[in-house]
Amino acid sequence: FTKFTISRDTPFPSISVFDGSIVFSAPRDQSVQLWSVGTKGGAPKPITPNVEIALNPRSIPGGVLFQSYDKNRGMSVWQTDLAGSAARALLPGTAATLVDAARDGSFLLFDKVDVDDGVWLLPLKGGQPRNLGPQIRTALISPDASRILVYELAATPDGLMRPTIKIL
Image (cartoon, rainbow, N blue to C red; front, side):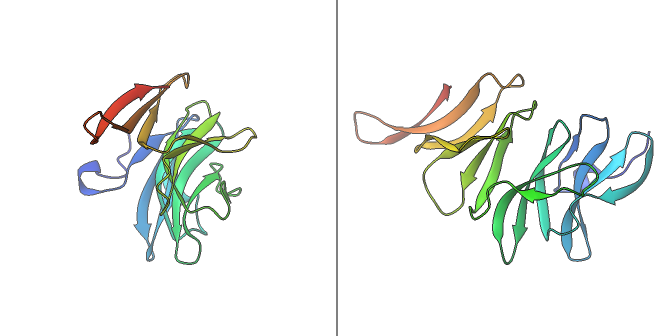
């Protein structure tokens, strides 16, 4: 067992990925990168070297999805392999944050930055993004990716907006 970080001392989450390694965000050289440590320990290796800030990692088969911030490109959603050699923006030209990802790697949920139009679904094996609903504020994908739990604002008969939870 190798301790690589102290969770109570860091605001950055860590995840276990499909090959058993650990991926975590950590600051270094005026940036925040994703790092990977293999199942046998060893020195952490950066897997997002060309990104200023990489946060919110989500494990999918063969890699990691994450949220990136860059002063020139803004906020965006990226995917990389565990070697860090195939990092790419998934929504070029769209400022977005990563909401959740299906564990099987079939789709992810994102929220467009500065656009109040709800949560979007992006199929990762091809296909166009689709809006889940303009009043959906956040969402969670079930472990088997068969359902999505959404937090939505809905108008009531008295004219107020009330939060509701639905399963899609």
